[in-house]
Length: 416
Image 1 (cartoon, rainbow, N blue to C red):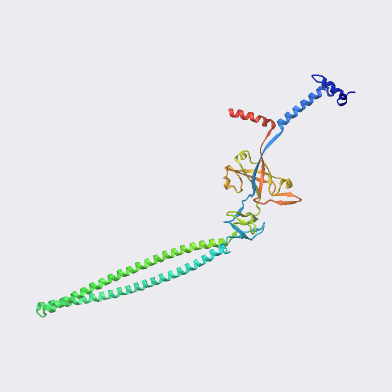
Image 2: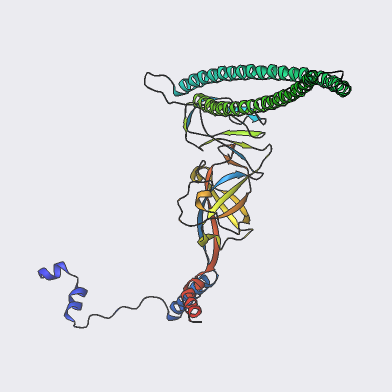
């Protein structure tokens, strides 16, 4: 036995000597069995291609929202939650206090800014009150002086009118005397000088009446000026008081701002069950969520926000597989639901109540939940409003054959 025969089998050595190799030994299966097997494989592949369905699933982000609508309590400004007046799940009435927000801003020296603003506002309020009281007192004194002067002018007018009546009576007597003197003068019983003196007396009486009438007119004008001054003073007083009220309103606004800097109480807008979003000591930004108030007995729904690429295939009645972020489906399983509404108009991403990264408008899809809780570990876990979730929606279902022929059909449609 040679060394080559020791390492290789005789069949291998014999096959290596042939140029075209060695013939394959036939297997122990008849040709009709192989043919039947191949036909069966072809039939199975054809049936699979025709009847097997493949679904295109779109994962859409969303959240749980009350069916009847919820009241979202937000912070009016950036602040710190200094006190929480309710507990999770508590039922409140409209107007009940929920949170107390305080400011964490301090100035140099460690004094809170709200306290400083409140003290300054109180000092300004006291100064305005003092100024208003002094202004009213000064105006009242001026009005009293004008009233006293008007009373004096009216009394003077009454006296002048009495003097005018007396003067008219005196003038009548003087004129009658002059007429008598005229008759005596014509008969030669009265000298010319005496007659002229009576005429001068009549003229003096007429001048006195004219002076009295002039004084009455001047006094009447002074009384009218006094009334005008009184009205002008009242108008100026009203204007000054209006300016004072404006300053007081501005001060009240500052006081409200100062109070808000120090502490502000957030109350419930309506009755319902409270779901807390903030805790005591946590910081909230302007417009940040503090709590959600659910109407009594409200059911939850899934609200999904889909792009136009996905929303176009969603139909009412489609089944949705719901994956709750708070309950990982690997441990708690997935929820189920059905599409009940699809918005006909898109919503700007800035108006969507979720923080979603999208450059295009989104369509709202409302999904009715099959269950309002999650069953796991032998107990029921309640779903909370506002919780994030992902909905897997089956957009379309086609067979393998349709998937294969779809590019050809698309080319034909583009040609048409």
